[in-house]
Amino acid sequence: MLKTIAGFDRIGEENAFAVLARATELTGQGRDIINLGIGQPDFKTPAHIVEAAIKALQDGHHGYTPATGIAPLREAVSADLLKRHGTETDPGQVLIVPGGKVTMYMAILMFGEAGTEILYPDPGFPIYRSMIEFTGARPVPVPIREENDFAFSAEETLSLITDKTRLLILNSPANPTGGVTPRSEIEKLVSGLEKHPNVAVLSDEIYSQMTYDGMEHVSLLQFPSLRDRLILLDGWSKTYAMTGWRIGFSLWPEQLIDKARKLAVNAWSCVNAPTQYAALAALEGPQDAVIDMVAQFDARRSVIVNGLNAIDGITCRTPRGAFYAYPNIQETGWKAKELASALLEDVGVATIGGPDFGILGEGYVRLSYANSTENIKIALDRVKDYVETNSKP
Image 1 (cartoon, one colour):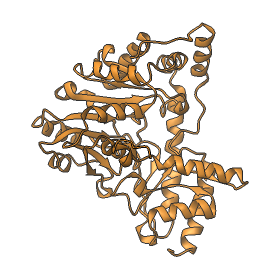
Image 2 (cartoon, rainbow, N blue to C red):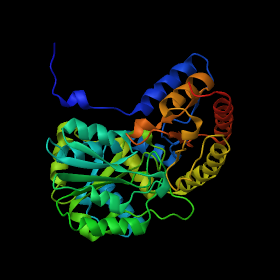
Image 3 (spheres, helix red, strand yellow):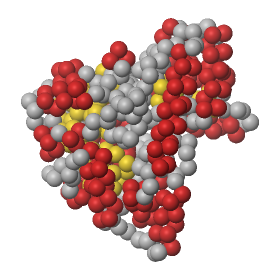
Image 4 (cartoon, rainbow, N blue to C red):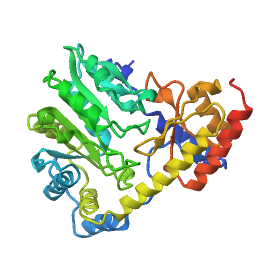
């Protein structure tokens, strides 16, 4: 029998893709499935971005690029960060990567090993914990609590740091909860981190342009005391409806960027050239499509929250960011994954059970409102009828 390293026995996955596969299978069988499970915009990539990729191919951009990405794109990323966050950055510290997960993978790989600890949000994106366990480090969950509107608590987060802590992962706006941490709490955290200068910070800001109700996104880039140990994760997938293009960016401290570059050379050489030119067009072109998409998400947000709160046994706080609702289903009596499975198999609504996002996820399910308002309303009617007429198994 082939023997692999122990890490592969610990590695997990993202169950949203398993749910997507099952939903696709049921659709292929002729079932009417409404997918509120997968986390991707249901909008097309804006036409000018697609045209830029086509032009890049026609202009002969068929070869390798630098591992860090083409210079004009890295410069455009720095210009965009300055415009959005008011912070100067060095394009030489920008790394263009094939999707947001890559930055998580690289950062956790750099800092995780046996005998160390990495803090991560729970509930949170499942790849955080999966990769931490893969490296042999001990995953330490930072509780993300409903009573705190799913914002992280600076005090609780800081209390979990020990002399073994190497990396702290933060995510706001957050997946799966839609929570947005306010500036006051972030400032408390940054102040407390000054006592822990050897702890690196990975700030996952992939939903940075999706906030509502006047809620401010506060980037960790705005705090000079963190800049020499901050890894920023962002990209095009959510903002520009480019999930399938597989392109993101990260900003690294000066002491880490060359290590990140070497990982890129070893793993994927470079992101494909036409996609980089498409990403450049996204940053430098009109932003109307982004504004319109977020406005439509905002309208759908009201529909899904109101609809969930109208179901007996379900309550849902209003998410302030991203495009997810994270209702509390505890009063229904159902276990989260059992309910998610039943909704898909019995009434054709794909959702994700809270435990797929962490050990603190029981009692919740995640619904994505990256679907049409019409489909959301139909799905909510199905969920309401099912939950109110079917007792727990």
